[in-house]
Structure formats: structure tokens, C-alpha cells
Length: 164
Image (cartoon, rainbow, N blue to C red; front, side):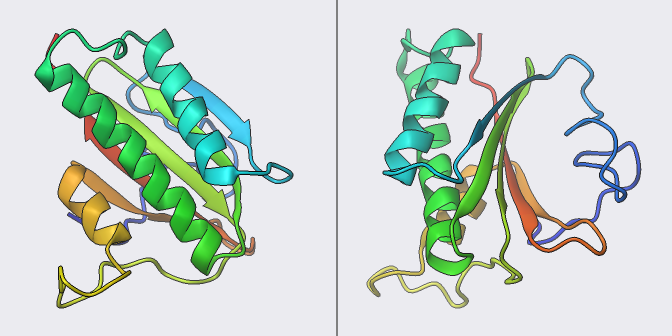
């Protein structure tokens, strides 16, 4: 699991000059985007947006324990990334969800300059500081994408699609 990943042109994430699609691979990825700039109740709004996307993409209603767990993991990761942007980056500007048959990608865009990282060592009994640890544990991979000469960043995470 990575904490930062600079993707090569044509890889995951936007091109360094800001052109191109949010993800060049896989080509069959479907995207949903929601602006959070003027939203109130940002975390519940982001969760509701994700829940509706999961419903539209057939993850919900869950038909079994594995599908239910996969959907709950997505909603938890959305909550953690959006909350992290609220607490440490002045609030999220946008959330994007990308779905393909094998994975779901969550992207949270903010204007902050900070670098998210799991607290090391992780202390389960200590309040706070668990968000990125949870993301790291639940996701196939995660990282941060920055566009040169542009403030802010995109924090992204990818989760495996549930078994069919």
C-alpha cells in the first residue's frame, strides 16, 4: 500500500497538465462527480452520493454478506477521506467515484497542501488519527495525486469490486 503515488501519463489519475480523463485505465470505468464546495452536511452528503452510485451500479441492495461488506467498506472510505479533507485541508471541493467490473475508485479533491498518512505507530486505543489507517487496511491501494503549479491535491483510494 502506498501513501503517495505519482502515476505516469496514461496511468491512474489525471495527466500532470490537468488534461485527460480522471482515469485512463480501465477504459470501461464509469464516473460520478459531486461538487462539495457549497454543501452543508458534507460527510452525509458524500455518503448519500456514494450510496446512490452503489445502488445504480448494482452493489446495493446487497444480495449477500460479501456484497454488503464491500458496500459498507466503500461508504466508510468515503467518510474517512471526506472527513480528513474537512479536518486537515479546509474541506473537500469535489468527490469522484469511478466504477469498473474489478474495482471502485474514490477520489476526494481538496485545496490543502498537507500530506495524508497513517499515524505510525498506530495506537488503536488513542482517540483520533485512525482515518488513513482504516483506508490503508480496506483498500487495494491509495495515494495522492498533485498537479504541478496548482494548489491542492486529489486523495484517491481503490477498493475491490465484490464477487458477482
